[in-house]
Length: 204
Image (spheres, rainbow, N blue to C red):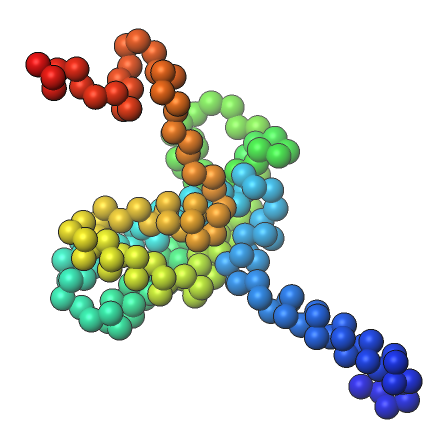
């Protein structure tokens, strides 16, 4: 800091630095990686793909041994499996499609299977690299929290393979996707079952 600044200006500079430094250091790597993707639909679709990849890393071998592992081993094993899944993301054929404001990431092979018109299709290696960066940032920032939630779920009697990793990650932790809204009572057609209604046959 220059010593020739007047005391008042020096105080002002230090005040600005104190305000600025916390602002640039509080955003997590995963939040920054998401923000860099742009519009909300891009962020949500990217999180969907990453969440699916990380969920797939929880294979039957991990699920079988999970209960036997200590918390430390659980974190080590699952973080390693997730990191490995992230490296595979870069090899995927990732495309972006949709009009402005509705653009989404997608697996190009899956998009071709579904067929239909793909507006504004874009496919470059940068898309896969962006997803890999997001995936690695998610593992760095949230692996410990995800493993804690998995442990709580298993302790409650649920299977590890039934853990809703995508929902926890994209809807709760990163808030990249909106939670689906429940249909109000009476919204269902006559030939559909309203989950809010009790089965009439139960009373018979």
